[in-house]
Length: 341
Ligand code: SAH
Image (tube, rainbow, N blue to C red; front, side):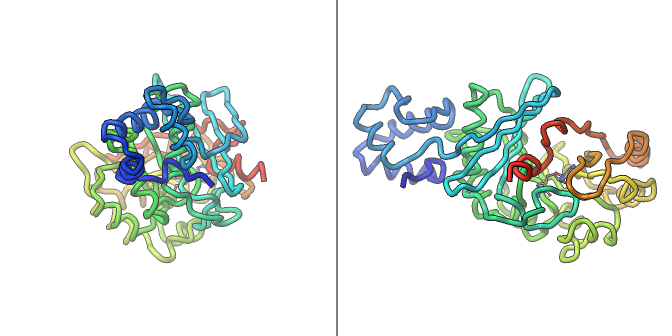
């Protein structure tokens, strides 16, 4: 079986090429084809000898993810359903913003965190993705878009809990940020967590400079533990402490995601509690009226979302209400995978 090209670090690729009697310059050429031009196979690497291309394609696969389904919504959301070598499925979402694209990456097949409003949690965790499977999502999207440079932001907000798979997520981030890899600025990369506190600490220690997003979703432990089981182990106090300790550069902010569920976590009182928790943290709050899933939750009405936002703004906390896009294609976390199963 061929190996996923993207599972190999740059040093390992240098070793492979060295074993094939290639000069270091050859490595730069291969990296450029793979990470900048994102060619799907070695035959496209036209400045390499035919012999070398053949040898490399015998051992390494530049296109390890198979596109199974592709859906596009009228409001500019595109969702790719990809199958992995062992038949597992994963999703990645492309979000068209003004003049650029944001890609939402998955880090696990399924998810074991059990958040009650989230479709990815429904069937539990199948397995962690490898670094190469995370990176190949970026390569696949670049090919779909025709150009890696059309992707401006990457958010680790797809299926799975990134901080429960840091052994693979950190190496993938290193290649994403490496100037010889995908070459993203850390300011353009965001890792989102449900609140796995030891992972926040470890990510802090890695010092990669990427943005941190925390899915808060409630203002008190009672409500949060009801909808996010992780909170029983790491209550809000610990979570907020870890957030305060996350290293931020000038003008960098932590994002708090808040899914607004009708009648459950969307009162003015809830908003006041959130304002109290976030006081003094350089942050912004993204309010997201929940997408309807198989669970019985309904999105908060628009007037409620706006009122919630106003409480935060009045307390001096930056807050936006995110319009829920892509609902007709089930663009929310895990929905496409769930419906294809
Ligand atoms: N495990 C990570 C990343 C995946 S979830 C995390 O929890 O942050 C990505 C985001 O989707 C989270 O902010 C989550 O709260 C949100 N989400 C999950 N289900 C949703 C739903 N039904 N409607 C709206 N947002 C949802």
